[in-house]
Length: 160
Image 1 (cartoon, rainbow, N blue to C red):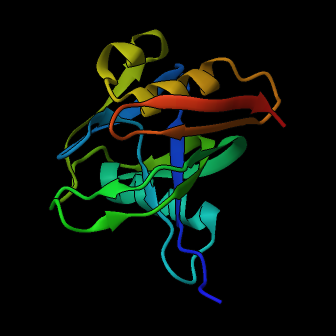
Image 2 (cartoon, rainbow, N blue to C red):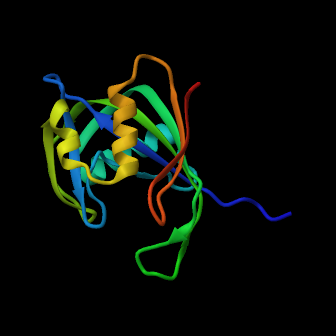
């Protein structure tokens, strides 16, 4: 039996005491809320905290799971050769607990943005849909299935 291959990732919507949202500008993806892949042997909560720190310099505490999102499409990486497999992502609400705002090897800018202005900066349809799940959050966990290539298509959306 061939073992399935999935990328597991985590994203953090970091909300400060004034209700602003932490965004980072990535080299390939434009403005996003921070997050990335879970490393081998790492749990999802540690991964989102690490990714936020690496990309923005901000230390966080995870407070709430917002949703689980599946990109069930496969496509080529930026190199045009490597296959990117199905991805499952867990998005969390986080609060800042320390650190200093900075950039990284993966980010060219980082800033706090008013909650209502975030969608003015995020252009990637999948990230916009996931951020909208945060805006609509009332305690029920969102689940979405979508593909991003050749274009964004939302295949399933529900609360679980």
